[in-house]
Each structure stands twice: as C-alpha cells, then as structure tokens.
Length: 198
Image 1: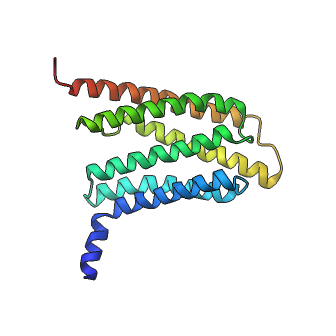
Image 2: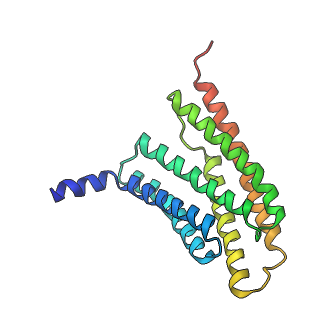
C-alpha cells in the first residue's frame, strides 16, 4: 500500500508542487487583501511561490512525468500568481505611480495571453510556452521580488530606497511588457499556422 502511495506521489510530484503553489497564491491573496501590512510574510510567500514555479517544471522534465494536465495546471497557477501580484502593485499606496503605469498594460497583455492560450487548448493546438514567454517570466519575477524588497526595506529601515530604484523597476517591467507582446505575437502566429486552411 505504501509502495503504491509512493509511486502515486512520484508520478504526481510536479502537480503536487503546483498545487502547493496554488495554496500559496490563495494565502498570498488573503494576506494582500486583509493584512497588507505584513510585508515580510508576503515577501517570503512570493519568493517561495516563484521558487516552486521554477521547480515544478524541472521536476516534471527530469522525472519524465510531463503531462498536458500538468502544463495547463502550471500555466493557470502562473496567471493567478501574476494577477494577484498585479493587483497588489496597482492597489498599494507604497508603489510608485510610474510603476503602476507600466503594470496596467502588462496586466492587459497577460489577460490576452490567457485568452489566446485557452482558445488554443480548446482547439487542441500546441500551446507550449515560447522563449519570449520564458524571458517575460524571468523579468517579471525579478521585478516583483525587487519591488517587494523595496517596500520591505523602506518599511523595515524607515528610509527611502535609492533614487534609481523606481526607474530600474520601470525598465524591468518595461522589458517584461516587450517580451509579453512578443510572446502574444508568437502564439498568435503559431496558432494561425495550426488552423486548417479554408
């Protein structure tokens, strides 16, 4: 019996990690919504969520347990995490207005990417992530962590971050937006090529 359970865990390890990230996302949303002042806890949850995002795909590939369900589940949880973080950055008074101006179009492109991905899944197309999408996620992760660290430092040390911090974060999010637009364009072209000729 325990061998059967061990085998089931091994076959579903990547999905279990993604499920743990989903739970982290729900806890993160609750903290942001109800206890926004707990910046340290929010920061730790963000780091763990991003780390688990990097781990689940690698686990699936190394253990040869990649599945369509796992890839779809991972993508949905990724979008949920980004949605929560966009909500945080857009609604928090500690976030500079300049950063909010770049996060709004980023959020719009992410919604379009999600809609396009769902259309691709519905038509049974190849919806694998593009290189642009992977670059976007790396830059977004850096921007989110750096933005949260800025808030944490300013709260913990009661001092202003260096003047270059906001322009640096803006450039990180701007690069993310460029990569997101290129990802959207790439997916649109890939999906069009998979449609039957009329």
